[in-house]
Structures are given as C-alpha cells and as structure tokens.
Amino acid sequence: MSGRVRALIVDDEPLARKRIATLLADNPRILVVGESSDGSSAVNDILRLKPDLVFLDIQMPELDGFGVIGAIGADRMPAVIFITAYDDYAVRAFEVNAIDYLLKPYDPDRFAAAVDRALRHISEASPPGGENIDNLLSGLRRDRRLDSRILVREGERITVVKTADIDYIESAGNYVKLHIGKRDHLVRDTMKSLEDRLPSDRFVRVHRTVIVNIERIKELRAHFHGDFDLLLTDGTRLPLSRRYRGRLEEALGRR
Image (cartoon, rainbow, N blue to C red):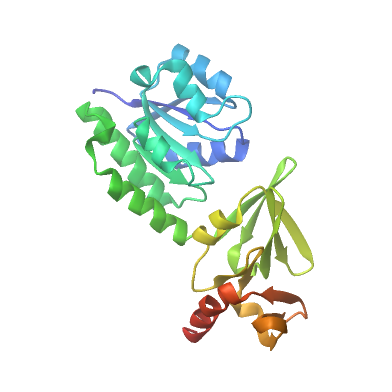
C-alpha cells in the first residue's frame, strides 16, 4: 500500500480516544481520519471514511465492537485493533480476525508493537490469522499479569487506581469493591477477572468474596472449625477460609 494508512479511532470515552490519537500523532505512516464515540457512529464512519485501520473499543453502550463488525461484515472490515479494559473477549476478538488486542491500561511500547503488526498486515495484504494466535494470547496474559493500575469510572470521571494502594477487594453483587484507605471504589468486574489480572506476588484470594493485598496483613488469628481471621494493619478483620489458607501461606512464604 502506498501513502499513509488511514486510521479511525472508536471509543465511547473521550480520554481514551485522545490517548490513542496522541500515541499516533508522531507516526508518519498513519493519518487519523476520524473519531467515533459510539458503535452506530463507527458503522457510518467506516462506510463513509473507508479507513485502512480501526482502533475499536469492545465495550460501548447499545452497539459494541463486535456489533460494529457484525453490521459492516467481517469480510468488509478494515484491519482492526481491539481495545478494552477486560480480557474476557480475547479469543472471540481473534475469531473475527482482529490484528491485535490491547488491554487497558497499555503502555506506549505495547501500543507501538500492535500498530507495527497492523502496518505489516496492511502492507502485505495478508490475512490477520497468519500470525500465531497462541503467541498473541500469551502476550495478552503477560500484559494482564503486569497490570499496575485499574481504571475506575465514576460518572463522567475516570480515576486511575494504583493496585499497590489497594488494601483489599470484596465481592459486591455484579461489582467488586476496592478498599483503599478510607475510600471505596465500585468497579463492574468479577473477582475471578481481577484475581487473574492482579500481580500474584502481592494479591491473594483468601475467601470466596475477598482478595487481600498481603502487604497489609498484620497477623492471622485462629477461628472456629479450622478457619482463621486476618487482621490488617488498619485494624480491619477479614475471613480466611480453609480452602484458600494454603495459597496464602505459600504467598507469605515467598516474601
């Protein structure tokens, strides 16, 4: 392909669109031809602007990223780099021939690698599945384990929470609650997803409903029927079930 690659940015969060545009600004091979704030607009903009590359957020209200592809047709879609705060959709993303999958918050090097992969695909007109999907998924899992921040959306504001600042996490229905000092943050996520993403040398599941930052543990206290309580440095008591006790003791033994 001659000339610059035409790129469209699709994300319902203005800050996310701005970050992508900023990261692309110094790339002489890419021209950003537009931004879409929702899935319906994205469909119209793809048909109207005919971009070569789309940075596509998966989770958007009404019409999500997969819905955009369904509306356009997978065989008519430009090259796609999916972007999302969750990795639950990774396999499905590659099934619809995504070039790459960026897990928020991504760093500039990881973003640049995804762009380079897309540019190679576009210049060679090769099918997206030509690369080893297992390698891409392994890289995704590696990025996930190295997460040091969690994005918390509160109305129109997005707060960046450092995972090292979290004291503990507890299940709250369809949400999880992050306890940070005297503040709490509700995040629409699952305990399993957070457990997989958080660094395992710092965060350990101690109960079906609780994940704790082991740096905050002051002592373990014997409880009834072989269970224990955890006492945190701020005086908070948390349950430690027998099911997870071995995992915690192993993690503490590595400190």
